[in-house]
Image 1 (cartoon, rainbow, N blue to C red):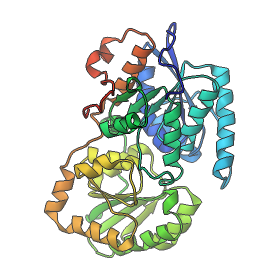
Image 2 (cartoon, rainbow, N blue to C red):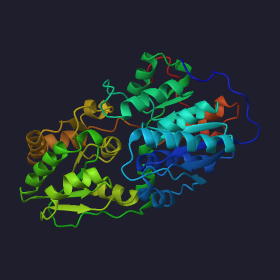
Image 3 (tube, helix red, strand yellow):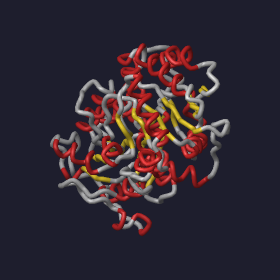
Image 4 (cartoon, rainbow, N blue to C red):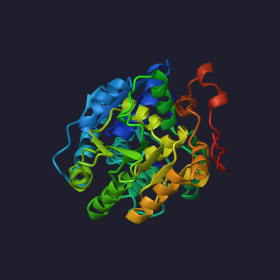
Length: 400
């Protein structure tokens, strides 16, 4: 059952929407929604940042043209999840109480997303969940994201699912079909927007070798498992025909694991985290992606880049099923074998690179705004016409 009633009061004037974000992926995926709202006479976006990825956040907001109107200061050195969660619920609750938005929008499965939804629920404000319905089926993998997204699914009034599979998960859990909408993923909107703006620059040094983009950061991979993967990737660099670029996450645990294994090798370039425009340009410039990130599993197929997923589970099986990604786990020998196969077999590489993108067409934000406008009783303008309204998911919706 949904936490909020199906009927909503009509809102006089503009719809005041509070977008809560705190991490780099949330900025990337909510930026198209915020920009579309700012350009629409029907909406007044209010962006609130929690600073969960504080050092990465503000420059990205500026580059992606998303002005923040409020911010929290809740991060502490190496703080534990219970401490972070408590601070966020308290801080976001105060912001929501003072601002009284018509709805709160959260994205994905971070601690910021969970606490934003929970704080809104406590203040009796309806919640829209962008990128709803992702599931691995394993409650603690990834940890704590799988639990976070399931809990948000019990709170949200609007469930904006990126794919038909994600919509089907929500329906199977008992979410009313009138509250589930298949939109595509806003990450595609933003990737195409950034590349169209032409503001980024590839971080590859241009040695002429084959370019492999690596990202590693997930909590469940940290420690000895990540150190072993680092040693395997160092061996990959010893092939002599590749250069590996690693934008290194700010997490001390990630740096402790990877820097000793990868620093000083001529074929492995460790750089500080890239701004999103530069990361998009770097992704467009690479030949192969090795990642444990969720978002990159969606971005790589948009550009025809085969992705090897360094995890044991994924909540984005659509890319695997389409053939654009492979879930290869974390075993060092399996990583080396899978990467070598793609680098050495042109036909295999071509099959992955041309398998297509199951995550959308770059119009997800339009669909989100159109549905919210309709449900708040607003007349939907021609720019958000019925042609882009997603079908209600009483049955799994067709791919967008």
